[in-house]
Image (cartoon, rainbow, N blue to C red; front, side, top):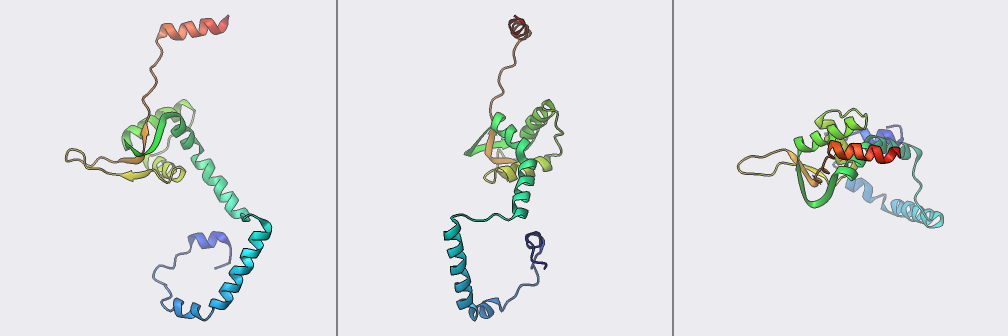
Length: 163
């Protein structure tokens, strides 16, 4: 391990668990307490946490990945604990919206990852409905589509705007 945050996020100890860690750390408790108190004193003096540059960059990358999905959800969806939407219907609405914005919609799986990254309370779910288990998302639902204007309404808006 090189001590950088990036290696901490990707290294797994699965299968290499230290089963004696508790007993080894017990001897270090006074030093850990002193280290914690010194850290708290620095935090109190500074008045805020310091966000490492690597963490800021990662957060910005995540925001870039999810910003289009967030805008879609703000414009076309409702969030709430009692909400649920069929995955195919939500993806279809996303595809239409993203194409209208000149964006590539990607796959259902990619969209689902971005959606749940942007909204951690939105989760994939498969409720039992009349003997079936459709794939969907809990915590979100589509808003009703606004009615499409008629040709006459579109022409009237263009005529009014031209005046």
